[in-house]
Image (cartoon, rainbow, N blue to C red; front, side, top):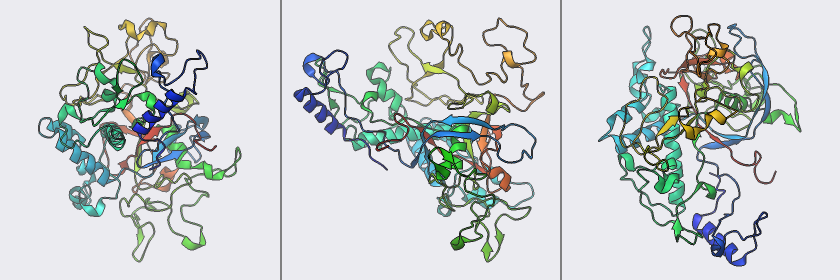
Length: 510
């Protein structure tokens, strides 16, 4: 893990030194930064974003998103379009069984006594391995928990569970950073609502239930009204949240075109995450070896005994085969992967050409009715409704969708959005529906997709990308796209996490 920040206490010490030297001044007022005598506005030393555990830096850029292969399904749902993806971070591999078992263990230990439903909701569906006319019971029993499969990608996880894992990972990584910097001490006895949560920690005393973990020492404050303070967003120490990648990010990272770029010229167009139009390695040292784990033809999952073509009857360990030019493993084959987007056939023609994404539901922190400065915290657990995207976990900040009914949201004065749910914008909302009859409605009925009547699409249909051990080579083309209800899971579908890159898109030295 690349360490791009200094220990917090050294930062605080550096701030004190700058305060004494009085070398750094405001360009707009002339007052000193980091000077306790004039109010103590702090400007801490900062280099660049630290690379979180397991992540690889993906330098962004422009590429042609969508079809680069024949549309054999005739869905016409991946029409080519040039888009730009910002730099971001992506997991080097798919999330493993071992990683998910760590999450399950933590969840059971922390919430198991009083909120067992949280652990139950996190459990993968191991029964996805069952087939009516196949003997797959060994995978039902052993695949998730047996150590022989610990480095294999976790499957049987639906979109909601994958998103919950990302949230859990965000808090555990940021908690470890604060422990590493000497702010917090290890607290393995955390239970229920007393667990560390990044958002709640950053609210400080503004939350109804502030974080009350084991604090070793806060950092010195230059504010003349206080001696010490908690870590803030302005310190640049805590990392952005782990999340699922967007469809555009996943597709861009999968191609790995950085390996074919000279200056601003992409020298070779790719069909797969490697050069050429074949799925075997052309290198003389590995001639003929499969470049990914996929199904070659009917009845051929791995080849002939003595020379298995991909050595994977089902999934394979996450570090199998060759990485692409970004250093990412299994961006073709092994398991398909969830992304953040809600599926619509026309997304590639409707979405913005910068950071394309469909699925925005804008929210804000929920505050007390009698005190708008007080942020509400979940005190107990509520089982997730089948249509909900968010599970209520004790100790997390409550949120609500922005709404015209709340004056503080000021939606009546906004130009860029007027309501919270923008999933069906241009494709499924009232304005885009042939049944649209009420132009005065704030949020007209979404009649474009009548789920279960004229369509299998609704706002819970999530995109998944890439081929799997169960797919033919066609689905290993990064531009292909499929969808599944966010509550469902399969034996060929896994995920990996992403993280936003803040600041420079290239990093130091470029």
